[in-house]
Length: 482
Image: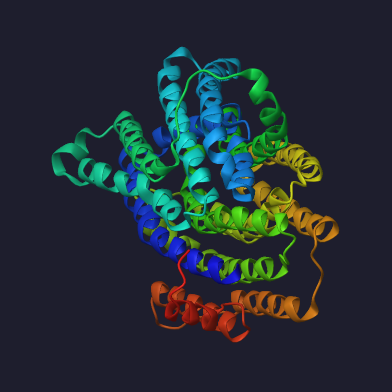
């Protein structure tokens, strides 16, 4: 299983590193520079609102489906049409809930068409994720990897023309951007569906509640986990926009920094998507999960620590290079936010393990405490420091929840603390912390210094055994197919 994980994770990360950074920095960033901080800040706030309520649309069905199909692939033909029929009706309820919630917190009717279009795109995205849960559940890991970047590839093509064509760029609006997302999602759904063509799957808008009731009850813990995680990861932008007089502007500033964290998180999130079905299979077969957890932890610690050190040291030139008009608050926010990448990465490993092991009761209790902690921190720190206060609150919250998930995993899952496995990780964290504080005033440009830190960090990780270079080279020579 470790060999299969490595083969697929390098393939998955490879194509995502090719496509998603191009989208984030070539399209999404260009949209903010074109539309302005305030307009993009409104979009970011409305997107966060739709994201938090996404639980109504998903109801935990994606994670539940991924786990159950991974354990018993024969369930696919019967479970797929029933869950998809349920999702059709949940989508309608979700759109209504978005409109009601938006008006209840003070948004005017003039914003609703924009919000509902963003929410409709969330429905399409949920459909893609549901299809992906079936694709990965039956073991088509590389096809799932292709689908994971297909919508971004299409956005590169569609928005690339609109944003970089001299005439079209002058007429570009937020509505164009949202419609481009709609088109990309629809095409992705059509292609993803073809990967399941041989399984005789059907779509129906009707469903039997008596037949679905056991599935819904079993998916409720997953639904609660998704709701709580969505709340504490997305309430920052929404509260910035609602609590401050210049909320749209502050939300836009915050997203200048958050975009870098989001880009880094996309890579770590890929690990979680691949780990979940593999861990679910291993646990169902009572196999040893320790090697896979250790491998994932080493890879993510190596990547997250060096990224945090390099980006935080050169936050100022990075922000001013990316954005036309970037205030210093965006630089300070990035210095705090990028360190959140380290605990978030650990959350993707150990939170995924608890999900695969169906330990959602304990996990949801921790997440509920996390949501309350994050809300209180944001309520206090946003009025005091705006976007920078929100970034500090995020770092504290993510560190808290990751620590809890690691402790829970060792308490309730078949894991043990192994000094030989833990020592190189701790040594690496210590060395990277020292590297962060070493001053450098040489003549080289910040870009060269940035690259030197990255290479140094990955070199240290390789020496300490955190990067499985030998394993990867062995995989390249093998003919093993996923």
